[in-house]
Image 1: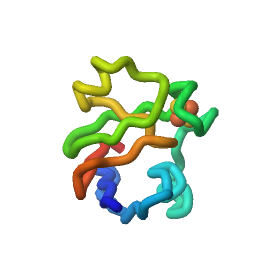
Image 2: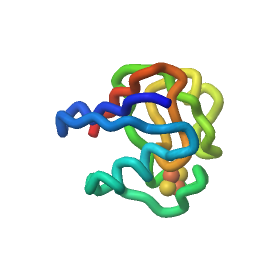
Image 3: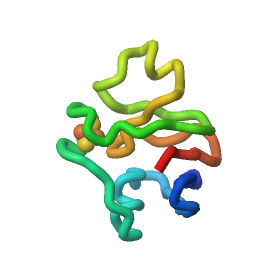
Length: 87
Ligand code: FES
């Protein structure tokens, strides 16, 4: 479980285990670009400002994953209690 913070929109939501960030944003009326929802297309790529990602996608290289600067919000989550996104 973690809190996702949308910095530009000044919103935050709680993401429970088993939910995707995208599911939570959509359920709260926040429009997000998506296509595959499975971590393969890269459409949902989002810039990470703070927090530690728990990457589950097949888009980013291991180096990009380690850099912790981008996240695929359809499938990946957070290892930290708080994940701040550039949204
Ligand atoms: Fe395709 Fe997220 S929607 S990688």
